[in-house]
Amino acid sequence: MSRLIRRFGLVCTIAAALAPAARAGVTDVAIPSSTTWVAAAINGAQIGAATTSGNTGSGLVFGNWNGNALVVGPEGAASPDTISFGTPVALSGTSSVNTLLNLLYGVNNQVDAIVTFTNSLSQTDQFSLVGGQTIRDYNQNPATTNTLTGSNINPAYGRVTAQNWWNNGGTGQRLDAQTFLLPLAWAGTNLVGVTIADPFATTATNDPVLSALQVVNQPALVPEPSVAALLGLALAGVAATRRRRSAAV
Image (tube, rainbow, N blue to C red; front, side, top):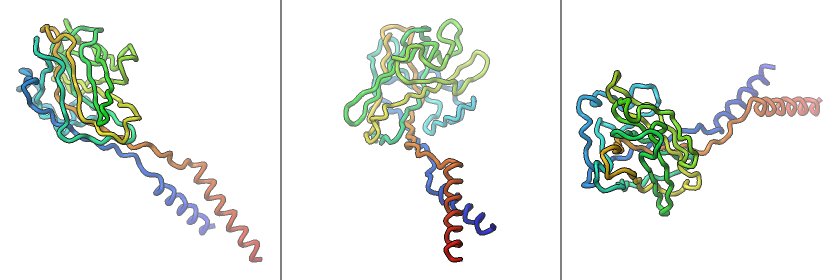
C-alpha cells in the first residue's frame, strides 16, 4: 500500500509540473515629452507622495510613475496627441493596457476622451471614456465628474474598466486606473503607439491628463489537471500494478 501511495504522489507531482503557471508580463511605457504634450500644473506636493502602487489596494503597480502628468490638448491646443513607443511592445496571449488617466473638469455621461491603440500591422482598436463612468475629474470636484461607476454603460465604447488607484483624501486629488482589453487577434503583433483625443479640445471644460501607461501580457491559460483526472491516472497505475502481479502468479 505504501508503494501505491508513493506512486500516486509521484503522479500528482509530475502532473503539476507539466501544468505551466500563467504569469503576467508587464511592460511600463515611458511617456515622452514633446511639444504636443503639456506638463500638467497639478503635480507638486499633492501627488508627489503617492507610491507606484497607489493606496487603494487595486493591485496595479506602475513602475514608471513618478508623480508627473501630461495634459492632452489643453484649452484649445491641437488634439489628438499620440505616443509612439520608442520600443514596440510584443503582444502574446491575452493582452491589455493599464493607464492612469483623469480629467481636468469633464462632463458626466458624455465621451470625455477617445483612446486608440495601434499595432505593427497598422490595425487600430478604439475606446471611448465616458465622464462619471470610466474617467473623472482629477480633483474631487462635486460640480464636475466626481463619480466612477467602473464601466461604460454603452458596450459599443469598448472593453474598458476603471477603478480608483490613489486619492489624497478629503477633497484633494485622485488618480484612476483604466484597463483596456486588446483584441485576441493581436497576439503575435507589436503594440506601437496610442492616441488620446480630447473631443472638446477647444474649450476649457475637459482636458484628459495621462500619468502612466503599461502593457500587460497574460499567457494563454492551459487548463490544469483536475483532481478527477489525477485520481483516474493514479487508479490506472494501481490497476496496471495489480494486473502485473496477477500475471506473475
